[in-house]
Image (cartoon, rainbow, N blue to C red):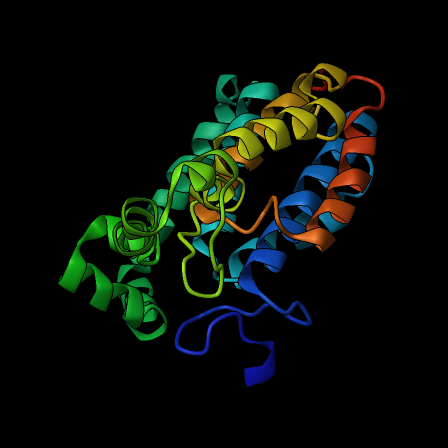
Length: 246
């Protein structure tokens, strides 16, 4: 149904979530939460598999990026690269992709045509960032060079309905300015996203999340996201991960 589509013009389903960013971060939290449960306590495997599938069904590049980095983290954490079964699976996957090459190509052209058009017209960076690089050139520099004074540089000030880059750090700067941004980030990373209170797994996963937010946006200024984040952080501050071999 169109109402559940993540984007009106390409592949993806966001369910009941209002925006692509909300479904992206919600599933990133869910993936981290259930992966931690599975590695630490061998629980919630079914939920982990379902969330992994949903990560691709949503169709957001940011969530796929987060999933792939999480998969890489899991591979290193569990030392899967030291197992013969890992390379057998990897080889089988490559063979499967080669055999289904035509079907995959057709699927991409049908479901991701807008991204391919952007790639042809504006290049790879614009396609990967969904034109955020264009927003950066057209919204960020004109605002700070033509509309800002010293007060704005210190404390920010912009109309987010008109001027929004959707690169997280630049949006925070536009909203708060230099002083406001530094104070906001200081209190945020001291009281909420405190890496010192996390175990190794949590530090890496939240680092991946911050990297995803940096290139995706709509994380620090999203109230529902903060609620989900608190739940996941509470889980990540539990007992450390066991070195379980598969």
